Image (cartoon, rainbow, N blue to C red; front, side):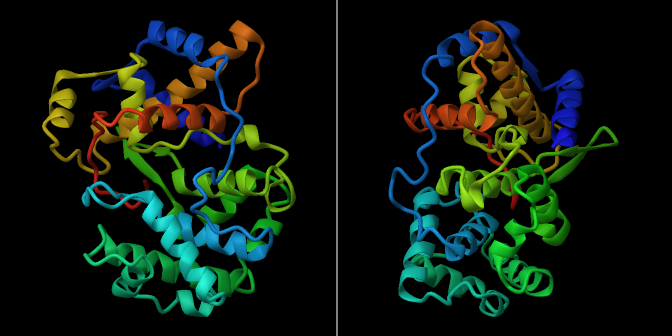
Length: 306
């Protein structure tokens, strides 16, 4: 996880399309410091939870395909979480490793009761198959055994995921150097922590190691709060809904500067109030803020990473 922080800080130091506004960071810290919510996982009641290993299996499947909804304006994360939940409620073996290895795009679509092709549908199905193969070959088919192997370390869980499941290797090359994000791998750890309330499969001695989850919504919120400033070129691209290419300097800067900005906000809150918040908690605040802003305009990148 230090690779994530260090590489994102480095991008922030030499970015040309995205810059951090430190007066905006101070204002955001002031705004947020007394209103960080307690993390309440599944407050919408859209996830599967039975308190045991099947929940872990569900979350790994969910986070394997949790990306890129925007090309279909009617599709959302809620459809994914709820559709997979209903699949499992009707068939407890639906996410067994051997079955995951056989799913196709249309079958995933049917699970979600979605009548149109999903964005990046074939890639989503490929990642389901990859999860099934990885679980069967290394963890007796059980996501719970993967989590047992991390020794209550969120950082080690991220490392295990990215080692055994290539689809979770969320990184890019920027100006000749590698930059790490690991968004969906970190989301899996955070989902476990939230779902199990920091106990059993969600008990991590280092939850503070997790960073924010570099996605579409949080950067847009940070830009609206004056924490991030975009170049005229990038602002125009976002305002006109032009696609920002995956792996381009602009896209890497948006994500990396967002990670670094949230770390700076967290440090500012600690210095101002002495309160030690997790980056995960700040991410939740920013995400909730973004959901309440229907006019929020985010960058558009076709990516399997977020």
